[in-house]
Image (cartoon, rainbow, N blue to C red; front, side, top):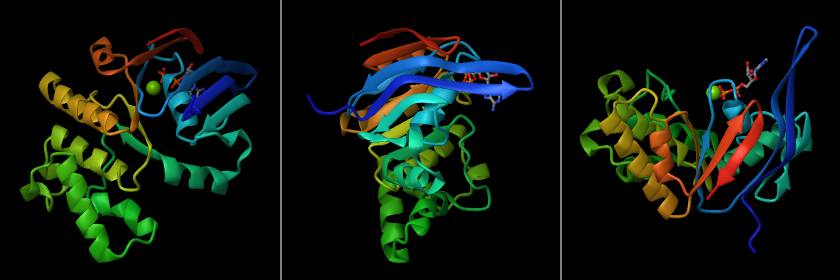
Length: 228
Ligand SMILES: Nc1ncnc2c1ncn2[C@@H]1O[C@H](COP(=O)(O)OP(=O)(O)O)[C@@H](O)[C@H]1O
Ligand SMILES: [Mg+2]
C-alpha cells in the first residue's frame, strides 16, 4: 500500500470565544490517496473550511495529527508550515482572489516570483499553465475585471498549479459561477485529477459529488460517513 497523501487522525479544532468552546472539528479521521478526487460536504458551520485549512497547512489541530505526504504538520512552526504548503498545496477559492491590478499572466507568474524562477522561464511556464487551464491566449494580458467569472477561475487554477503541487484544494470553486460555467471548471478539475493531482473540493452542492471518487460528509465537526 502506498502511503496516503493526506491523513487526519482524530483531529480536533476547538475555538474559544469568551467562555464558549466551539468544536469546529471533533475527532475527524480520514485518509486520502494520491490521485483521489474528494468532495467534502456538509451544511454551513459543519467544519468544512476548518478541515480544508488544516489540509492546506493554514491552521494546525488543537489535538490529533494531520499528515501531508507522511509529514506530521501538527507540531510545525510557521516557517515549517509555509514550506510544506509551498511544495504540496495549490488553493482556489469561491471569490477567485486574483490580484486586480495584475494581468492574467502576471497573476499566474506571482507564485514563481516568490520561488525565484527567472523571468523568461516564469513567462513560458505561466503561458503553458493558462493553456492547460484552457484560457484562450488572447486573454493572457487582460486584468481580472476584463474577464468573466469562469475565465477568472481558470486563471486562479493556473496560478494554483504554478509550483506543481500534488494537492489542489478548492473551497466552493463553483459558488460564484452559473451552472454551465461551473460544470466546465469541474471538468477541468477532473482532468487534473486524471493527470495525477489529488483534488479536494469543499462544497454544499450535491451535484459536484458526481466528479469525485470519495465523499466525506461532515456534521457538527464529525464525519457522518465517508464513501468511495
Ligand atoms: N476563527 C473562528 N473563531 C471562532 N469560531 C470559528 C472560527 N472559524 C470557524 N468557527 C466556527 O467553527 C464551526 C465550523 O466552521 P467552518 O469550518 O467555517 O464551517 P463550514 O465551512 O462548514 O461552513 C462554526 O461553528 C464556526 O462558527
Ligand atoms: Mg466554509
